[in-house]
Length: 372
Image 1: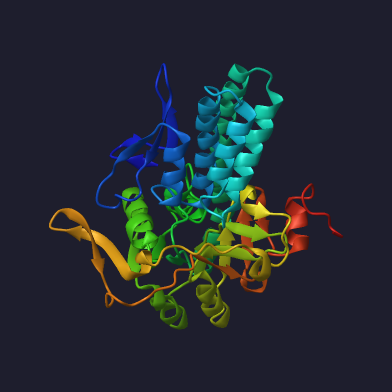
Image 2: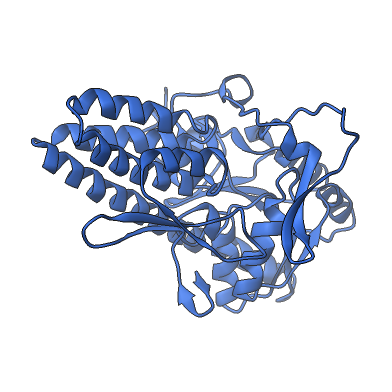
């Protein structure tokens, strides 16, 4: 995506003697565009856990680069394998719900183990981190290609009219390495000249919709309006939403999808009003070992301060403001699970699948036995 006429990915490496991992500091958006330097695995763990970077695909890519940093650090000690295993465990523990992170760590462990010398292991980790990032960007580009015909058909059914799309949280370029998942079809449609308009949920408690999705869409010139989280049902009742597209942090083999808290309620409202509800995700977000999302997907419980405080720009400074009585306790579940029965389709890099074992078996036969 371009920012101030310069193309950026969300994560990359720079340097000559010692490579530094670079990422966009999402804590500062939408008010400031700032690039962060990450020089060791501890910094990467903090960047992931404290959400300086976030989103399923970007977390996976960050874990890939985190493992490169970990390998580089382990190479300076007396027991490479033990230290690498310890640092890998710290990376994997930063965010439990999105499976892209654990998948990237596992992929790196295999690549590193296959190399012979310590020097070759570090080189393999760097090469694999780049492959993970490139794959994420390419998968999201293909998601845009496969989602575009859905939007086009809706526009044609409206006589070439505007397609009103509701989003929840940020599953855009900032949540991946490039393009995004839920936003990829939107960008593809906009670039193809299909009129689109996006209803952007603010997405409490961290306001990823207001801070990130609205910022992205504005940079790309996509018409949009920011709305309160609870406005979606009203808009659907009054036929002002043509489709919903969200991302996902983990999807089961049966098609149940974990995403930012509040997604389930949007899916219920969509079902009640006959609005198509799509989930866009790369294949790296599937957890082929799980079948019942509500029972089996681990749901991250984050700090109460995210609910009790809101962050914004005040007199040119980013400030946090308490929005409840000082002694009010809060509970902060980061995700909920939308059952497959509420999902119209899963938009993936291989095509659009029915949200079911059978549907996924058609796209990923090597992962899903038809009679499994």
